Image (cartoon, rainbow, N blue to C red; front, side):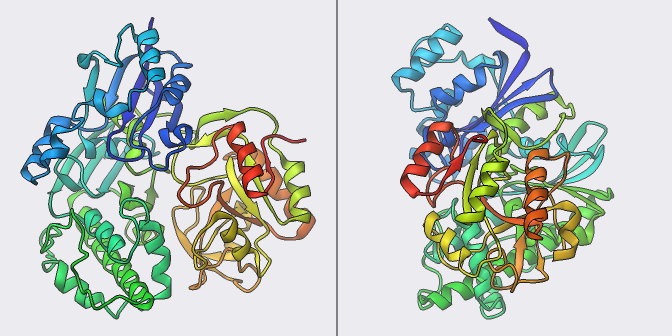
Length: 515
């Protein structure tokens, strides 16, 4: 029987599928990524396990889809993507691979066979509207400017919105093929990384290069001159299929580092251009930043130069739109209590076990409580380590099978953050700041001495706060290295069984509760 207080939001079909459960229009009771239960990184399809987790909160009376499939199909046909446009082009087809368990689930819970949900029950919102709503309706601002920058929705690639008194209205729209996100992904592929997945590696690699060496070349080769009169960002090429053709003579590792550095600098130029025009289009002092490009934590700090207050929902990419598409329809502010919304591992947070293990091996995993909704581990599916050892970065990178140059993030007691870091900090690892003492904490300071800081207070995560407080009392160090409990190319640990497998496979203890 359908529960009239329950609504589902769904994203699927492209990458990183997710599902959210909203109760009484404002309470987020569950939100999870499909990859965590399927164990397929960036899984584009939902699966019976994540559906079963969602339906524990009640069978929905309404289901929302995060974009308009008809408009998206028109754009794909216009772009010559005929196979893509005609393949799995309805929400039903895009939700899952429709295995036998999936079919049984649908039949039992919705009274339909062959995994067919009556099409009229799924309400479609637009892609950028879903992004904007996910940010605005989880923020604390009744009056805000909302900026959405991503690769592509149906047609839109960059939008600016005015949010006021529960309504958000689009005040600017830039359309395909002119896309900052597509360009950044193309440059990711150009230096040998995987587009739509490894953009954060390019961001980290940028610190090893010279940002000025190819900055002018990239600006001239890819972009039309920017205008002070309007916010348009126009590209000279359609970069949907990449730019492997660009500057083939630049093919050494140092060239790639210099390209990464220039790419990051160009992005920051485009970001500033957008923020300046956003301020002209809407006079609010509050900014909400959304879309996949809002994961660029190196650039995000720039927003604070232009706005008094900035909110970035911790899941700003497409997966976060499973919340956003419901919010876009309801136009109700959501009761945002934090990103811990996924699968729940019950039991006391393993404070004693973690501290004991850190004192001997210096590295330990935690899988406890509700899994994080978003791409970053924030204490519940985390690999912790002592940030002070000179060899810790190499030790953790070896376990996680990551490139040796890549840095790690610190999680620190909020009241101590400004004593150790200069710049923007916050609870969701959304900004980089300068580590004041990189020689003392080499495991969490990048080559340019930056750190992507997570702060913790007793309200945001009381168990993690208590653990850090005890660690500080024992060691005089108010922080730990915090990285996601996974290895490169795999999703984060989700369940108790995942944690047990991780321990057996990688030889690092993962605690699900205090022993």
